[in-house]
Length: 292
DNA sequence: TACCAGGCTGCTA
DNA sequence: TAGCAGCCTGGT
Image 1 (cartoon, chains in turn cyan, red, brown):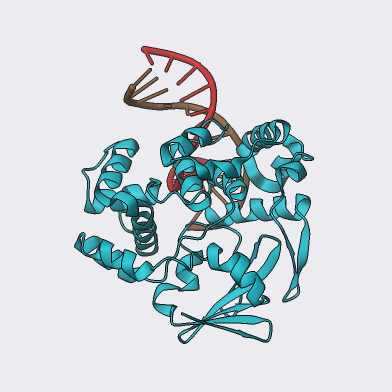
Image 2: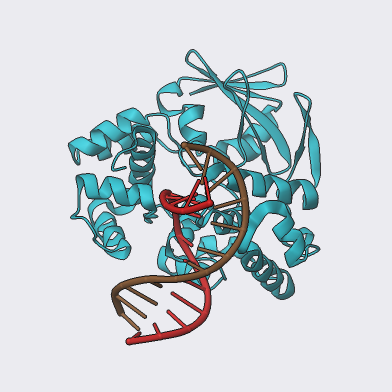
């Protein structure tokens, strides 16, 4: 991979087989990346606004520099990991993963912030992606710091626990979180009153990390798996939502197997690559409507 | 107008 | 321990 800095941009050469913005941002792992008219994506991460697009074989990060690339974007986009090798390992497991990894060849698992993932996936429970995005944007606009303007639009950081603790249950409900308002309030109060360092869960092993997460109101098995995978870099997890259940029933397990049993089957079959396999299978299932 | 999607909580047996 | 109703919102 070659890295070129030019005109407030960072350009990556030689990674396009393993990096497709559409696959990365539409595979269900993130909610704050806005698709622009030119098919590029704009997002807010660690107080920066950045735009990402694919042009021929180049990946172009706009509105950034080499220092931020080294300090933020290299880890955030998981650029130290060889996704070709992961796909090759998955492909030889069976024909379904061969198709799914080809279909979502540009997927990468972002290394996102654990706190933002905790609140975002509580909002995701029993909810649809456009409504999840709207609620998170409302919380950020009302309680997060103003980060800057890009292409005429104002952008805000996801609020810290302290910033969110200013909001009442009614305020949180007003951000269109629905019945999850009380869960968010309870988590925010607990974390800010006890100075709980959610990010430190990353240091725990996967089971311990998930056990800590399910103690929070509004966090059940699926939501905890998502937070662990997308916010704590625990790749030996396998979140089972309706789409994953459908694709697993289509390809691997009998119908009406319980969600914990589907998860156990997947962890045994896919091992340390379970989290990656989940992403390829989820994207494949949802885009093609498998099992509907 | 009625129904559906979607995961967690809390109640019941 | 399993099963199930209810929660909120926008789309069909």
